[in-house]
Length: 335
Image (cartoon, rainbow, N blue to C red; front, side):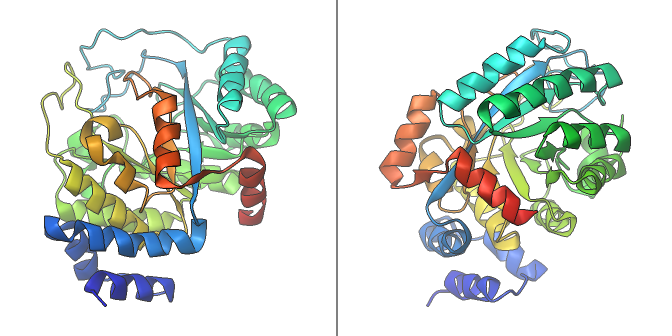
């Protein structure tokens, strides 16, 4: 038995990795990637079998953001020619939901730029969510920025199942990425979502000049935060942002990161998210031996790959798309 299977067996027995063990995963030699992914898959298979959760984003509000996040084309300091618009009308949110439903997407993600939603914007989301739930019954995730407790309660009461607010990076690297809000602001928003009864979703963007130790640190922080869903984004550096030209990643390293997150957060949804196409490239299918969830379609201001390609990839791997009914049943059990 190799060292990765020994680690996987210990994780499956309920033990946590030490910091040294976690670093050994992300620093492992490239020629050990297949044994590492095989071990990660044993953990994934225990909790998720061959099921894959599909997620789709609706960019409900674009640009117009006062924050200074260095990775984001929508920030106040970015010089990127993107389309900017205020919160879209309900009919557009409903159209997006129908498109997601027709593609057998389990989770429809309503995402809005900005520091946090106004009460009027919450009204708009609440109104749409009620009709989406009545019509399609699909799982809904909202990502609207820093949230107040009363706003969280309204979203929960309307039927929002999950709230996303990413930590993005380790606390020690946070101020290198943004100074317009604190790391504590992000943690607090996840806690506010949890207290409302919504399932917490929080993840990371890898490739923002962080150290390997900081990748390990944020993986442990997300475990401590008890995030149910962990989107792992890989930086897609956009010209006109402060991180323009940063290209620290390669496919094998990205696979090691996904394995790391599976080992540290064995029972959680690990989602391969933004930047997978440009960073994992031809090795995208291998990522699903560690992760059990992907975004399909486009992201906020960058394009994804064709949804038909994603479905074919899952079919070729022998994986199965988790249906809306299965996801709702799983969500009820988690609650």
